[in-house]
Amino acid sequence: MNYPPFILEKQMTAIVQNAERDGDGKLSPSPGAASLNRRIVPYVFFSFACYLVIGIQLAVLPGYVHLTLGFSTVLAGLSISAEYVATVVTRPFAGWVVDRRGAKYSVLVGLMLCGASGAMTLVSGLFHALPWLGLTLLLTGRLLLGASESLVATGATVWGIFAVGTENTATVISWNGICTYGGVAAGAPIGVFLVSLLGFPAIGVAGMLLGFASIALALRLPGAGVIHGEKLPYHHVFGRVAPFGVGLGLGSIGFGVLATFITLDFAHQHWTGAAFALTLFGALFIFARLLFADWINRAGGFVVATACFSVETLGLLTLWLAHTRSMVFAGAALTGFGFSLVFPALGVEAVREIPPQDKGTALGAYGVFMDFSLMITGPVAGAIIGGYGYPRMYLFAGCSVLGALLLTVALGAVARSRRFAGLG
Image 1 (cartoon, rainbow, N blue to C red):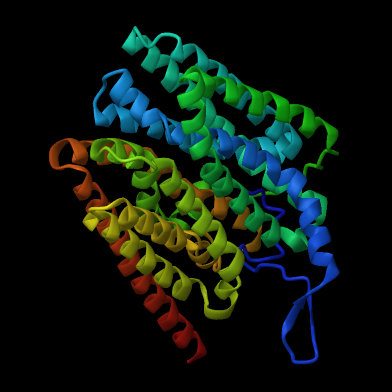
Image 2: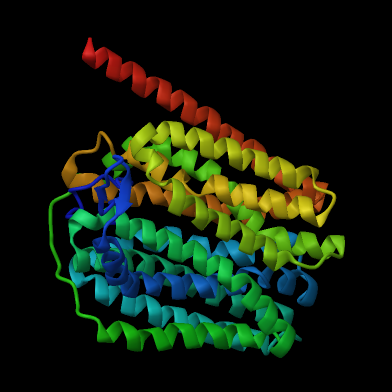
């Protein structure tokens, strides 16, 4: 996500804990924590609404493109990746909109695009007898949804930070992440249910309702101010965060293949329950973020990222070897658990040496690597499926995450050597 330069006071993953010490020296929640969360939720809800639309589509689009419209698995993957193309292109623009027009404006524009995406998806479902026209309309809707994702997620996070104060930056970021993946997890079974009950056009109607109805809620909330500041050239900051972004991109491939092709894999195996696999992924993602996010502060980003990549690799190798639904469910859960803290763990290291006035730009540049990874994962994994089958797709993803693990270990070693040299 691309945050403006005023977000400077806290490291991205310094999870704010409003707590007090009890008699045994242990942390116990203070009454202020619940109050803070209640103040944050109205703003990050818009991220939940947007990602709920994304989750609804994830569970049904690949099967619709491949099985109903009759296109290849490569094009089925492209139907998912098209959204990430738009996200990559529009993420810098979303930051510009937030900086100059305000976070509320960004959210409102994003929600309008979300509703328009739903309308385009609805129309595409009416032309299933004309496959190429239906696919073209569908891809147009996906591009609109990708732009919506950039504007809503960036705007909602910054809007929430304005509302509760920059000292609670990390708490807002954490809740926004929970809402995004919670939306994906909740949307998957909803999408399957809607298609089975009302047909594919119901997916478009759901997107329209969630997008346009949320605008009414956004209008009721107070706006946020606009703060400007000078930045270093984007390419300078980009180069500084690139090594960490490569690790994030490689680690995101596991999520990309699971989200895009798990439904087709289940259909190929003549199994039911693909949506439950996506729900498990999202549920374990949220569970890990809620319980273990503070370990980034305790052990450091490199240590947490190394542990996360290890678990994610194990999950993807389990999917590679899976011969039963139970093994697939276990692999999806492990993958979600492992992927949960990758973004903040590597992100805190990525911005550690960045000057304060450029940390927002650095976070935006860092997030682009995840977007780009998800953009190319669909077509690449679809090609692997076409040539070698579904198990090799999971093996490819597992090897990619293993590469991220090795890169993280190397980056951690370099960072430690520099710190020791500085102490010397």
